[in-house]
Amino acid sequence: MVQGLIPGAPGKTIIGLTGSFGSGKSTVAHFFEELGASVIDADKLAHEALMPGTQTFEAISRSFKEALSVDGRAVVHKKLAELVFHDGEKKKKLESIVHPYVFKRILEEITQCEESIVIVEVPLLYETGYDKFCHKVIVVEAPEDMIDKRLADKGFTHDEIQARRASQIPMEEKTKRADMIIHNLNTFQQTRNEVEKAWKQLHSLPKGDVKKQWLEKE
Image 1 (cartoon, rainbow, N blue to C red):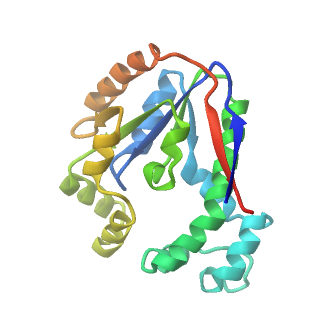
Image 2 (image 1 turned 120 degrees about the vertical axis):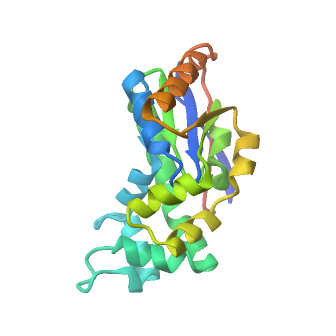
């Protein structure tokens, strides 16, 4: 790998938003958006990378034929998840295809948005090293048993929850590295109150040109 630098967007504050699987990152991101932030969802961009017609789709279809639909024209997300969350090497292979695409798209979204504060929601923020591209990082925290119940209500099995959790660094490590922590514990209003408090703090941060480190294959 070789390193290059791409300048960030002058006058914007880039905030990384992460947490564990099911902790409520999207809820928190929505509250920030209501307050006036621009929100970029890395998961949506990752799904975009799986769409037919993209170079990433072609690479995935070659490497993960088992995850394709019967006619081979689409990626079946559930099949792909089952493949990679139980096989470390396959997971690394998929990430090597998807992550560069997602990082590039995030940068495009940042440069195009008009808002001065940009919240970038990245589930694997620390795992991918994207935290070094941000001014600050916010971690959304919730008790594990509460998360398990939320995910079970959404239809996730115990094994699926554990597999996703095992693919991420522990919450304890994330909170140690966080600049801010938002506790998504009880009611939406309590969570929103914490978001509003964080929002006020974000406005006091200096705005500037953050250098974006970009990794390109040799």
